[in-house]
Image 1 (cartoon, rainbow, N blue to C red):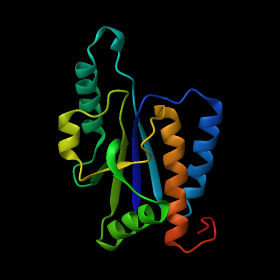
Image 2 (cartoon, rainbow, N blue to C red):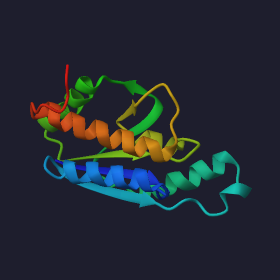
Image 3 (spheres, rainbow, N blue to C red):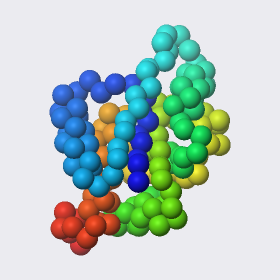
Length: 157
């Protein structure tokens, strides 16, 4: 299976870059993994949040391949335990999906057009995290899910 992660904006904190790279390397043992970075919208300080969300949405939609399952990481999404998240991904594999695309949106969330493209929304927590921290938390949970699926000892019950 291939997993793609679409994100808005670059990471500028070294510790997040290093952590992300570590989990990206670990994931390579379990699946094909690709990150697509959507550039920050220019002149966002002079735009309304709705216009910024729409412009980010257009860029996100342009980065999504047409035949993939799209899952948004959103605070209003379904919450899972780590084991349940692993089963969620495993079920997608059993159903024969070749690729899943996860999307982390910008600071104002997702446009209606992006939401209509998604098949599911997943929340990593009821807490709010910066978009950079969410990337690292997601990568750790994705890696954890892969080790759970494979029955490896990384996750402890």
